[in-house]
Length: 228
Image 1 (cartoon, rainbow, N blue to C red):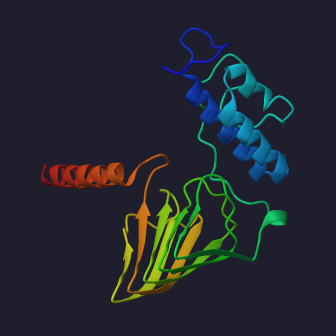
Image 2: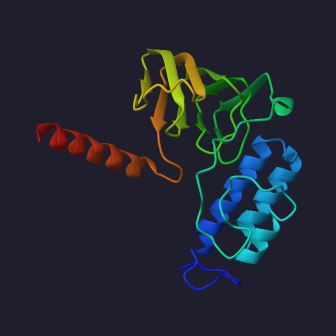
């Protein structure tokens, strides 16, 4: 099990403290406490940190907030940090993802624009929004897939609106989400010609196989409890 120097008996593993620290940095970034360059630097340091003490130092100069308890001996995460939102000063109007006879990936800690254009021609693109800092309000994704594919992965807690056309191809939405008026919205539209667009909901760190297993188990649970 992964543990770190400076951890106390009964403390949570280093991996949990690392994630709690990153969540705290995300919260500070969303509240304009640190600029984007410093946020990215500290997240990179957090990923490389080999001890709990190294992780604590990343938060020492930041103001106290309702954040995971990683400043002192405890490493148990507190209330979950709110979803990261790009500060207004760093929002971009447009962004582009292009894959021509190749691939393009956007995942991890990244900041989509308010309107994002994804174009694939005999190639593939993956847009993973699970750890993305979304702009406020509605984030739009305009897709054109020609003899190629676009995989869009969204986390629970984000509203998804999809309106797509498939011509000798497919435009598929997993459709797991319930609409939450207070949650950010991802609006996806476009065209797939001899290609495909797949929209799926996955928890952070969850693989496509794990997501399929989870959905099957949830379906079985609904049927079982519905019959009881």
